[in-house]
Image (cartoon, rainbow, N blue to C red; front, side, top):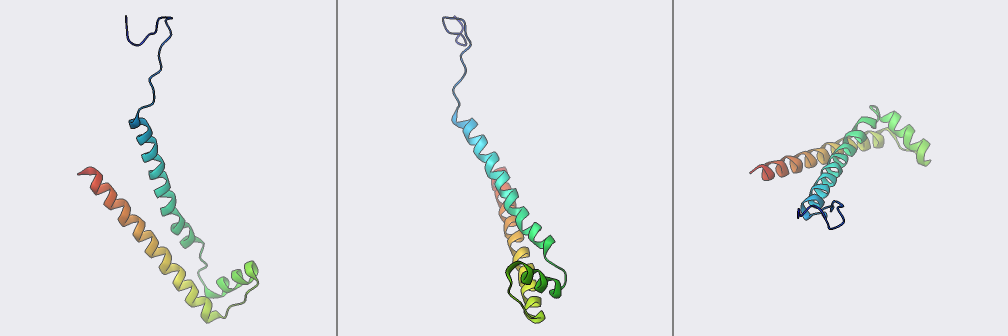
Length: 102
């Protein structure tokens, strides 16, 4: 008797193994890592290129007015935060890639 069939001639579906669950988990983690990396890129793209526009957007969205100087510092701070977080995610991704391939 073949082990793939039961007595009533129906094929037996193999139970999910830990490997298939692990593969799905790794795929989900990889997708999440790419989404996390895309967030600072998206934020960097939508940051206005001039402090006046940033002050205007903040005033429109929150009702809080900023001086042009403050908006300029805030813009530079946002750019630095985006670049640092993107650098962190890239280093972490490369480190994980190197560790998994050795």
